[in-house]
Length: 260
Image 1 (tube, rainbow, N blue to C red):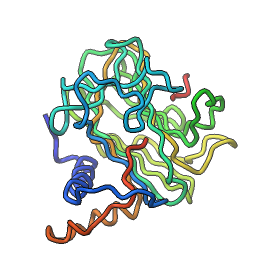
Image 2: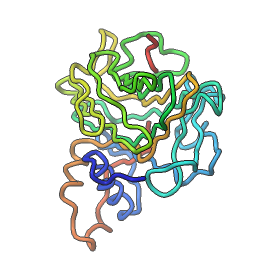
Image 3: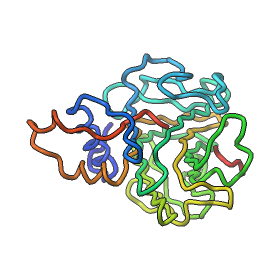
């Protein structure tokens, strides 16, 4: 059930191939810090609380994400965001280093048909446990309205139809210098506008938050954050023999939704 023709999916697979071929992680690379998670290192049913930087919102273990082997884009595991397996899921991963330049956040998402309610893909410019009291900390809030069959940008407007029973690519292009953001779903533009959403917004990508409070399930796989320089390097993949000496700087497992 994999669609390799999606532009966003090709980008993630290229990045994944480089990471796997290098076989190493280089930390402390400042603005070149990145993120990649395919969830293969975890056990099915494992709750990602305090594991490789993952946690529940406000560090609450009861809403942390669960690893699943029910469906996966690559290999056999993914992250399940469910309001059925537990009353709600609010999986958070913070990261540092993305405070300037251009960044791309991408993920593969699977939504089964016949579901209702909304599930959310959220990016924050600031995050602190028990301290997220300003709406301007939310920069991206993609609301997947399963009843309507569309994904909406809750902040800037715009929507496109959702694909079900298939893996779909989410991509968010962020330019912190220009204070702009563009959101794509299966390479279709949902919206574009300013990254900041208020005077308290920060020029940074601080955390990802995957949330549902409804009785629905979404799965995520191959979750990636890459700087413009990393994407440029990925576009210039060296010969196989040279990959052993190549390092993508600072690949870290990184990383609510402002309720309507």
